[in-house]
Image (cartoon, rainbow, N blue to C red; front, top):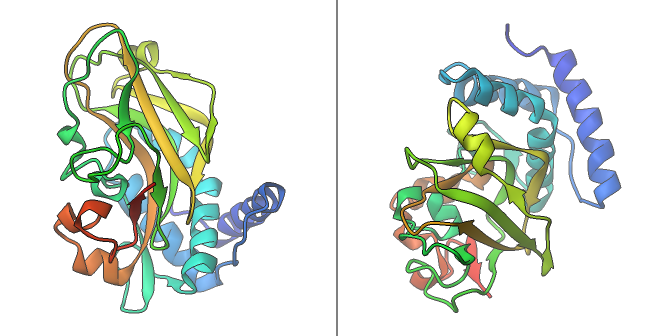
Length: 251
């Protein structure tokens, strides 16, 4: 059944309470924007998803994703308009590898050397062209809500991922058992990551054996309409091609 406006209003109240506790600046959505959010959420993340476990994960974190939309409304000083926003507004889409400087797609990640931490999201990717091992920084034109981690590699080798956010290392997320026992190779996070303007993000992978790993982020990205329109080719999204997109930057 479609998400009711009343349920979305409850989600927004819960999101506002969480945002206040985290000290995040935000702006509430109008009723029309809430209805657009509910429709876009269902059509992008629920109705076309064949794996029930992914639908359940996204539904469990819906209020956090809505909180990201509220943060984006304040950060962009623009109004929300779904997956294909009109000019002057912003949209909600799947997290794209280019938004994080990985490359054209999540499969652009190079082979990972086993037995040591390997950089994943950082300033020194080929696309970013910065210093290897330095964090990347979220620009003015992006807000991300990350609720789970997946791996496109059919035989996942990753044992764990560690994020360092704003210079503070976070407890390691152990992913291997969840990915092998999951129908879809996915590890849900207890609490979503909220990446907004100025957030620095460094993520590293550990696996025992050398080989391919194609981790990717599950959640929602909020990006202004002009960025979604002008940067269809992700080569220009990241810092090595200049900073005009202001989505992901080196540090």
